[in-house]
Image (tube, rainbow, N blue to C red):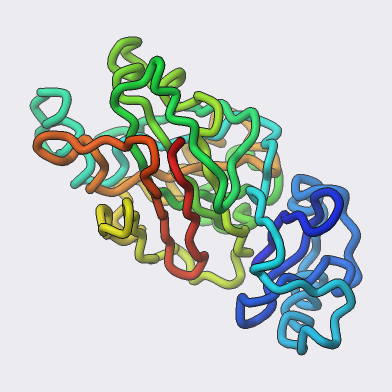
Length: 297
């Protein structure tokens, strides 16, 4: 099931893609009525997902309220997360190497411990939304295509072998970053958390649709040029490790979003670095989920 938050006519609503991905069906077509995505993630049950997947195969002309994809505006699937997003830093080996070069640091090729940080999101940006470059304070705007995991039920003291039971689904996040602000403050929170710095979408794909652990091609393009091209199987610390380690000391509430890190090919990885400018279009793609495109203003 590929679940979306969208607008058509008046106000945001939720629905799901049909089997071809060309139409959006309202939740009501599968007998569901949830007030927002956070509630859906916490309360939806397996039979409801199965019903939606069955309905997704029906002709759109049988579905009241069906709308062609081009007629709707996709919002971020969780436009206003309940908590900051938990992020993984330098969680692909090749990106760890390019980040070390940019920061003029030695890197011995090992990563004994995961690097976690949080990202404030007042409102996530949907597919087609704009990224505010904040160029009055930012001179090194960068992109980072990432696979994000949505936690489906409260997780505490979860053994690694049971971590998959807590995954509701997956989405795409562009972890937009202001490198000069990161460097200035010697931490990442501010430089990752400016308004519009979290494009997300285009949907949440429920966990049953993707083999576990995910081995998905992940890419980014800037103005059509391929920049990142890797696979999520190359994560240094995988989803089992992340959920198990974090849940040892804190409860991961249902609806928690974990962004698993970006592969090499970001702007800082070029010599000299190639940062985003006004008018650039960034596309982030993850196999099995789709893509999000956002223009810098």
